[in-house]
Structure formats: structure tokens, C-alpha cells
Image (cartoon, rainbow, N blue to C red; front, side, top):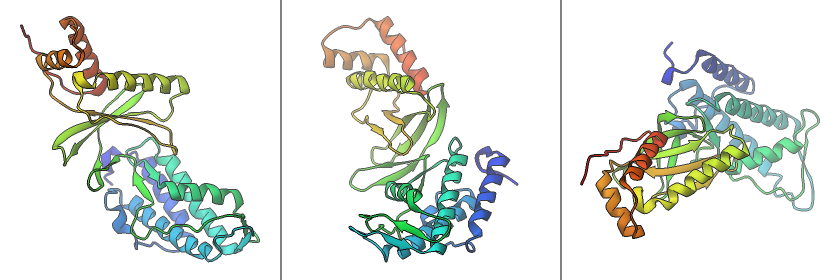
Length: 285
């Protein structure tokens, strides 16, 4: 058996085990498999499609009771148990794949709904849906699960790109992707999820420093975001072949002051190590 990206056999076995747990509700359902064509692991693709089917089917049933407004509503026993199983498989799968190349995110709307359902679902006797619960938006043509190694870019129309891991340090991983609009390579520096507050603060300081250096080494394409699902800082930096002479010229124009060549060289070396990019540092003058 050949595993994608040298995936550990135990991880693959865990996916298979969770998939079988899911099949205890009903058989495989590939109705939504077209939404997960980027998933290379076949069992995981089937799991996502089947989970997606169950969420749509179960929330369709729940929507018949929604919105609840000032009154509570009774959600029947069998679909309650099925939804508990679906949520359980989803959360265990996300924990299992968290630090692997198959890590994934849950759509924010469904993530919030899962969190709400966890507060009222019951294994027996049905469940009491709380007051002021709104209808669930049903995703027939939108994926509920997206790969954590996929990045979406907003331009005239949203596009998604696969991320290629190019380096890893004690604080973060660095990925690369090719932007079709700009016809340039970009790198994404993403903090590891197990960082403490002090380490995240240090990572943010690095972002602030790099942002100040935009006229010196970066294009204008630099963004910082904070995801609420799994807090992480994303630092996007243009991947460029930069000559020391060009950097000095840009620095003069932007700052109107001189930075010693030795200091510039040290700065470039630091950036090269931090972002796993190649920087040309020729002899000049």
C-alpha cells in the first residue's frame, strides 16, 4: 500500500477506522465527492463526502423546526444520535490529522453549528433545540471541509492554491504557492498551532518588523490574519530573487537614509534563513 506524502500507516489506519464508524449510520455516500477533488487520500475523500451528506440530511430535518424564536423545539431521538456520531467522527478526524499533510479546516458556519449542537444533543429521548436557533444554511455546492494546505485568494474572483511545504522551524512552517494572477511565487509562513502566548507574540513582532520593511524587501502583498478555529498567524511574503543593489536603492528612496552594507547583508541572510528563500547577494560598489 502506497501512502500519499509518506503518510504514516497509523494515520491511514485511523482514517479507515473513523470511516467505518461513520458507515454504522448508513453506507458510503459519494453525492458530494465532486467538492473534494483536491483530496488525494481516497478514504478521506469518501469520508468527507459521506460526512457532508449526513450534515445536509440531518440539518435538513432540523431546519423543519427552525427558527425556534422564543420557543424550544424537540429534535427526534434517532437523528439526534446520528448527528452525535457524525460530529464525533468529524472532531476525532480533525484531531487525528491536525499535524499531518491531510490537516483540514471546517467551514465557519458549520463549525459554529457543531459547537451549538454539542450543547444540546442527547443520546436518548431526543434533544431540546434551544430558543432563538436560526435555520442552518445548507451547502449543496460549497465544501464543508477544506484542506489546511490550501490557500484562498480574493481577487476579481476567489481562487484556491495548493501549498507546498518548503521549510520548518521551531515556531512555524513555511509554504510556497504560485499565484496565477501575479505570475509570481509567494511564501506563507504559518505559526505552529501549539505555540504559547509568548511565542505567538514573538511571531507577531516578526510580522510587524517585516511589514515595516515592505519598501526594502517586499512587494505590497503582505497580509496578516487570525483564524478563530485554530488560532494561527499567517504571514505572506513575496518570493523574489533580490539583489543587494536593488534593495539599497529601494531603501534610499523609501527612507532617505543610509544603512551600512554589512547590516544589509546580515539582514538578507536572516530573511533567507527565516523564509527558506534564495536571495542573491552579489558584490557591488
